[in-house]
Structures are given as structure tokens and as C-alpha cells.
Image 1 (spheres, rainbow, N blue to C red):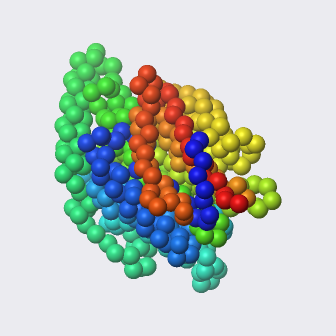
Image 2 (image 1 turned 90 degrees about the vertical axis):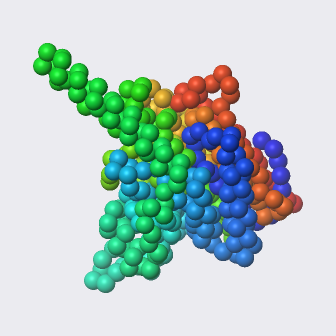
Length: 385
């Protein structure tokens, strides 16, 4: 890990773990730097970590080059349904939305959910929600005054072209399956699954945009927060909810204590079903908290033992996931670690003493195999004396 000094405040963002085209590298760098700069301005203005990660992720959602907000993958019916969540390390409050249509910035709904939770019980002792999905989430956002939008405004030429291509391929697979059923001596062939288990000429996780976006932050008071937002897997079934909406799977944040444990925050990306079955965000943070090793070693161990070798993914040939993990040691500084089993992971980061954000496109080694190999890297920002 490279060492740098940090006084107070740190932001890191990611454009996900998946495949990032070198043709869009300039755009990836620009949006990461924009998000980091805006977040750091807010940190200098002493905004809380929750507001910082929410604003950073909203910028990523507004980019047509990410699979979140504008540019999200289309579901099987050609609609946009987004998942997102946010967690506060100080209060441990959590807010999430799933399969949400009609909102360009789902992370803002998540932030509002936490804000309402912090006000306490509703009338008649009702408990304020922390997770809302579908039309209920849209109605809640509408009542809260969050701006709505149309599906057409969230489409890009790239996502529309990909949707049409995938639909043609899916149609060809379905037709081929029908012919097999008609000529198989009355042995009925099982239907193809749309997302995870298609034949090689169908749509798979690898063939889809997996670049969920997210952010982790330490504010000027030392509080941490994390957030994640996703358009989901291409051609997902309407109503499918991924890890970005699931507690402990998409993001995690937990303040530590000055005497012993560090504060930790994590934002994940990859194939949602793989991340949900392994509670990857929470497990990465738990490993860092419970380990005397450096954060990179703890995260590497979690990915090896709790993801790639997880018994819950024993039937999965290629485990696709990534995580951005921050640990804040009150007297020592910040460690940032990123890990991924996908071809690439795109990220940016900035400390309060940095002049410009750093950008990195992390890639598996040339000899590595996506879904089976692991890349772990990190940076260490030391607390100045």
C-alpha cells in the first residue's frame, strides 16, 4: 500500500465491478473525479457523511456511463427498475429501495428514508419503513416531494441497443428450446432462466452490465457512511431485487471507538444473487473489525473463504463480485481496499489534503480467470502527527 497523509475527511467512489471498456475511460475518470470533488467540498463544509455519500452517488447515477439511474439496464419488459441503499455508521440507520421505477436518483429516496427514521415513530406508534419496493417506494418518494421522471429519460442509446440485442438472442434460445421440446420423445426440457443459467448463446451475468455504483466516506467528525445504487442485471424479471437493496449485502457502515476498533464502511458490486447469498458488505466489514491484520489481508481472506469458496455458491461456476472497503483508524488514518473477481473495477478517491482525486481502473492479471481469480489492492492515508 502507498502511504499518504490525511487530516480529516475521505471519500471513495466506484463505478462497479464488471467490465469497463477502455473506450469510455475518459468518461469514467471524469465522473469519478466530479463525484469526489463535490463530496470533498461538502466534507470541507462539514456536511455529514450520509449527505456526502448520497450526493456522490447521485452524481454517478446521473452519468449515462454507469448502470444506475440514467443508463440503467432494462428489465425483461424494457423498463428501468433500480435498487439502492445507504447506511449511517454513527446511528446504524439503514434505508433502501428496490425495483423502483420513475426516479432518476434512487439514493435520494434512501437518504430520505433514514431522515424519517431518525424522527422516531409515526402516528399511533407506527414504525417508519427502512426498505420500500416497487410502487410503494414510488408513492412514498412522490409524497416526500422527490422528483419523478419517465423511463424514456433514463434510457441511453447503449442500453437500448443492448436490450434489443439481448432480446433477439433470448428469442433465438427460446425458439430452439421449443423445437427440442417438440422433438424429444415427449421428454419436456426445462425452460431457460433469463439471468443466471442461460446456455452460452444466452444472456448471463458476464454478458450484462454489472457496474453498480457506490461510495464510502469519512466526514470531518470521523463518522463513516456508505451507499450503493444499481440498475440491476440486463433482462432481469420485473420486480427482481438485487444486493443493492439488501441489508448487509450492498453496503455497510459502522463507527468504531477511539480506543480499539476502527470505523468501517463497504460498498459492493457484481452479480447481485452472488452477493446476497454471501452478505458480502457486512462480512468484509466484520473481517476488518475482527482482524489484527491490515485491512487488505482481511478483505482478501473474506473474498477467498466467504465468497469464492463459499458453500452458498457451490453450484456457481463463476463468482462475480467486488467491494470497496474503507477502515478509519482514529489515531492512524484511513485504509482503502478494493477487491474484485471480475475483469475490472473502476474507482476514484480523495482525501481532505489531496489537491485532485485519484482514479484507477483495476484489472485482473492477464493470466487470471474472471469469476475465479481475485485482485486485491489498496492505499493507506496516514494521520499526520
